[in-house]
Length: 317
Image 1 (cartoon, one colour):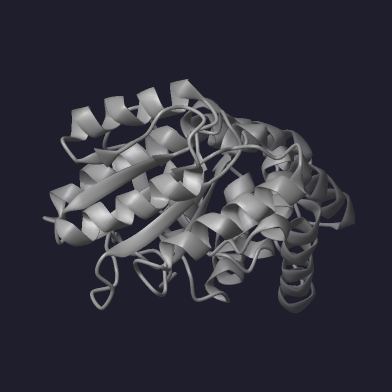
Image 2 (cartoon, one colour):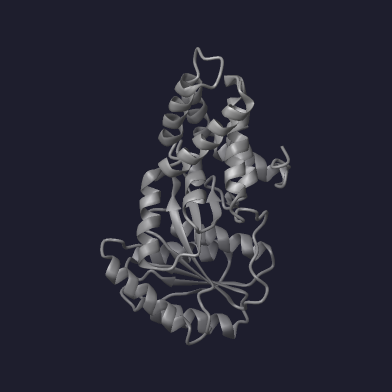
């Protein structure tokens, strides 16, 4: 299939393969049971396949689309053997994801016409938000970009300290205030500092509270408004970080956050420690918001840009 060309470097591809190992083992274990004793793809196999996809956190809506596509192939080709199912699944899921024009990136980059490029990061506590910021800062710095971090999650002292640790580790400047400070004030100071330093990228951490959507919405709206006093079209990207190991919960968080604020991109973390990697396929298909980054390991270089072709190729290897 023309979908599958090696776009990533060998090392990057190996990291992705390893990061999806648990998801693959779980998926193919279920798939082999679903087709046991069957020689061709019939209604029973399709029913079992539907269960396997839903159980693998691909999501009901995306699963039904995949099943429809395979049913069309069965009708068209008359006879499909179960041994071909892996290849067919791989092709049809790649085809489905190819209908969206996102997930094509192969490396970390930012638009050249925005300086500083302002990225606001949102997500509930515990999803790997601060770690994602640190790893992203590291990758962008490697590209020769000047990065400034803003610790606007002032709700928890631990969040400020954790971001400071990442700033020190990556050796990028950070703007912070005391716990309990106004998050918008931190964001304002960060942008002022970034402009003064002629920085290329600003990454703003925000509080991860979803218990009261109205407060969250008001806070994020205020942060945006105050940032625009310094950079008129900030933020250029609102990145929602989701924990891939929570499966369907990640869908729910995406729904809640997209209601609370305008989210423009997604990062799905912790895929290496879970069998729920299928959630990336569902999220890519269901939300009209691009998955930009995936976390496939604990190392500083284990945040990758999401490329749908490489992802599907690794998942169905």
